[in-house]
Structures are given as structure tokens and as C-alpha cells.
Image (cartoon, rainbow, N blue to C red; front, side):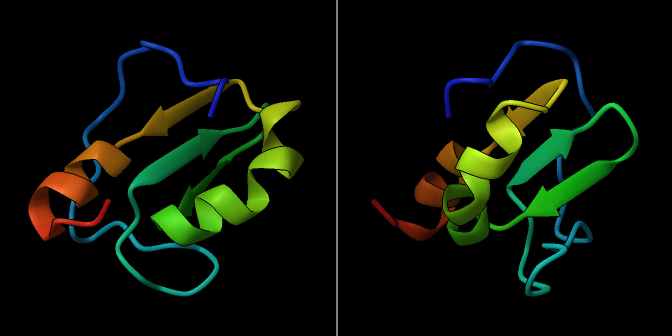
Length: 71
């Protein structure tokens, strides 16, 4: 996801859930008004829609891969 920045953010936790399906969120998309949380699958599925409008994208999918061996 090319819009990922190094802007400081709170780490995502198990309590953060994907706005699309309710799975654990690993991506936070900060928009000019509000934010969206996505699991890895839905972050990839909707990347084209948010990349042009996101103020910041916090991508922690590397944690998902490390924790669950996905890859």
C-alpha cells in the first residue's frame, strides 16, 4: 500500500475490529473526516478506493504475518 506513512499512531490491538467484517484490524485508514479499520483482506480489497483520499494509512499487516505465519 503505497500511502503508508511513518506518522505516529496508536498501535492496533485485538479490540480493534474490521469495519467490514469484524475480524481483527491490522490497517487503520485515516481520512479527512474520521477513520476506517480493516483486516488485511479488506484493506487489500479496498486499497484502490482509499489510497487517493487517505491522510494516513497505518499498516500493521507485518504483525499478522509474524503472529499467524501468513505470507
